[in-house]
Length: 399
Image (cartoon, rainbow, N blue to C red; front, side, top):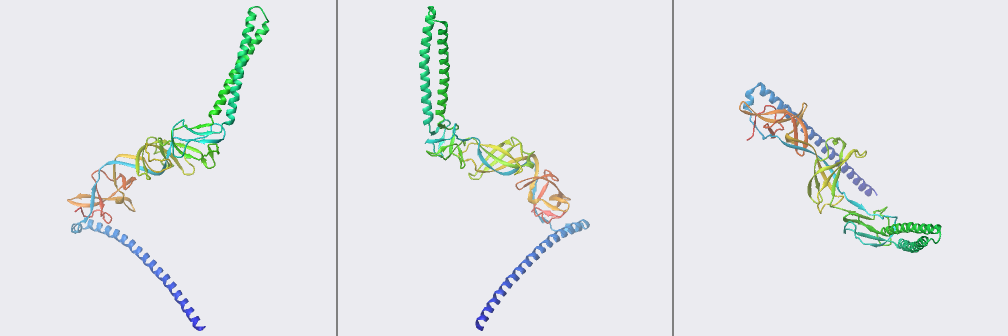
């Protein structure tokens, strides 16, 4: 028993010591990482202080600057160029011509389905035949009533003509003649009404045939023979026709850009699924702000392309700013200090190439290029590499 107790005690001791060892190792690792970060921060601070002291020494002792070895840098001569800024957002492809087919009268039972999902259809093409038994009976009754009135009218006209002939021979009474004529007029009115009734019933018969009202593709056909066709159910449209010949892309832009985006503004549309780019212009700008997204809707037309489909994801780049003669620099060359933003430029003074600090005011960012509003001009020489540890007035070389 003592033996078992000793073994168990030894195992617990080993587990405890291993756990303690892991905790100590983690603590040591975290301490070393913290110490490394502190040293890095101290080095950055020391580099700045050393650069500042060197600059002050060079001002007080020009011979020291002469004795300095020039630091190798890379430069770029600036020039004015067109600069554009784009708002980037996600949108989707939509069809401008989508038709949700529905019966012209109330819901009815389907007798025949003449279209399949994915089938190309033309405007006026027959898609469904609905139950028409009752309306056809009504049509037969209406036509029979029409023929009855025609027969009665023909008989009434014959009687009226006979009464007229007798009246011309001074036979009979005027009341008989007037009564015969009134009977004709009454039947003529009934015939006209019966004719309109036939047309009305015929229209009802026509509604049992369901036609497409657009050219396009049958995107949804969710109806079978024997089911009730109502157009839309809880599951969605029973028949949807999409015309892919008239597509557009839409997106939502934050409200702070409202004054920058107007009709006709250029937009670049990228559709990743088909790896294609399209150049277009804004054709619609929403007049209200969505309370949920705090943005407004924009739309642009897309060209005809067989690979474009409604509801595809699209990436939009909407141009909201353009300058025809701007100075722009790589964004990585911009630096900051307690006085603000600056860059380092190369200037020739007394036959020497020196680094000079230039304060700048920035504008828009387009990709990796940053617009400079104030501080730089054409033909200035920007230091693009090796600028990080330069101080104002340091001797530099480009080779």
